[in-house]
Amino acid sequence: MTAVTFPEDFLWGAATASYQIEGAANEDGKGVSIWDKFSHTPGKIKDGSTGDVACDHYHRYRDDVALMKRLKLRGYRFSISWPRILPGGKGRVNLEGLDFYSLLVDELLAANITPMATLYHWDLPQALEDRGGWANRDIASWFAEYTFAVVKHLGDRVKFWITLNEPQIFAILGYLFGSHAPGVANLHNYFPLSHNVNLAHGYGVEAIRSETRQAQVGTVFQTPPIHPATNSREDARAARNMDGLLNRWYTEPVLLGRYPEDILKLLNTIDLKIETGDLEKISQPLDFVGLNVYTRMFARHDPNVPFIESTLATDHKIQDAQYTAMGWEVYPQAIYESLMRFKEEWGDPVVYVTENGAAFEDSLKDGEINDSRRVQYLQKYLAATQKAMSDGVKVKGYFVWTLIDNFEWTEGYTQRFGIVYVDYATQKRIPKASAHWYRDLIEANGFDLPG
Ligand code: IFM
Image (tube, rainbow, N blue to C red; front, side, top):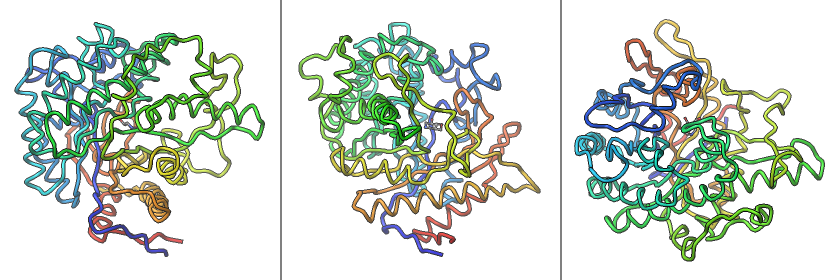
C-alpha cells in the first residue's frame, strides 16, 4: 500500500454537461440545439435515443445537489445550455432559462459546493447553425453576447468560468468527420472554422472579464498523448502531425499566442482567415486551464490523408492492457504525460483536472453496483496526478467524469460513466461502490493505493 495524499484545499468534484443530463428539451422557452436535431435524426445515435429526458436533472436538480452533498463533493462542474438562455442563439434572453441555473447555483452554494460553469459543452443553438454555426466568423461575437448574458446573471455567485469544453473534439467530430452534431464533414472549411472556435474562446474571456472582476477564467482541453503505432520514422512523424492537428492546434494559440509552425507549413494552401489582432484576443491571460483525460491514442502514416498524412490507429491494441467499455485503453500515464506538457510546453498554468473517469458494464446486483474496475481506474489516474504534482504541475482540483450515468452522445445510454447509477425507467439514482470510495477519499484527502 502507498498513501496518496493531496493538499488540504484541493477542489474535489464531479462534472456533467447540460445536454447529457438535463432533459426538459422543450420546456420553459428553451430553443432547439444541434444535438436535439441530430439525436432525432434516425441512425445517428447507437440506441436510437435522444437527450429529451436524459436524467431529468432539470426537474431533479435539488435532489441531485443533495446527493452531491452526501458524497461530500466540494465542487461541481456543470454546463449551461446556450439555447435555454438565448433560444434563437442571439437576441432575446429567456429569463426562465437563466432562472434554472440561478436556482441550481443557489442550491450548490447552500450545500457548500463550489460551482464551476462551462459556457459551451456542445449544444449550439440550431438557429445559429442555420447561419453557418462555427464556420461563420460571427460566432465569436454571438458567443460573447451569450456569455455576457449568463455572467451578468450568475457572475455574482459563480467564481469559476470555462469558455469551451474540448474545442478540438466538437470541431473535429462535428465539422470534419461529421460523426457528431451537426454532422458536417468538410475538410476545406474545417481549418478556418477551428480558428473561429479559438477566436470565440478569446471573445468569451473578454466578455466574462468585462462583467465580473472576481472570476477565475479558464478553458478546457482534452490533450491525449498521441503515440506512434510502430517504431518507424514515418509513424513518428505521423504521431507528431496528429498531435499538431488534435492538440497543439488548440492549446498553442490560447496559451502561447501562435499556431504551431509545423502544422502551418503543412496547411500552406489553406486560407485560415486569421485577421490582425486575432491571436492577441485568443491568447489573453487565463487563471487556469481545465484538462480532461481518458486515454492515449496511436497514429500511423497514411499518405492518403490530406495535409498531415496521418491517421488514428484505432485498431492498434496493447496486449494485456485493460480496455473500458468505450474500447479505450486504461493508461494512467496519460494523465501524467498531459499534465507535464502543460508545465513544460504550454506555459505552466494552474490546472484543474476537469474530467477523468471510465465507462464499464455496470450491473445492479441486490441493489448494489460493485464497480471495482472503476475504483481501480480512478486510483491509478489519481496516483499519476499526484506524481505530476510532485514533479511541479500546479494541479488545484479534480472532477470525476461523471456524477451520474448519462447520455453519452452517439453512444446514447449504452455507456455508463457515472459514479452514481441511473435507473432510466424510474430515474432512481444509486451510488456505485466508486461513489462511496470517492466520498471517503474526499474526507481523507487521499487514499491507499494497493500494491
Ligand atoms: O461524455 C464526454 C464529455 O461530454 C466530454 N468529454 C468526454 C466524455 C466521455 O466521452
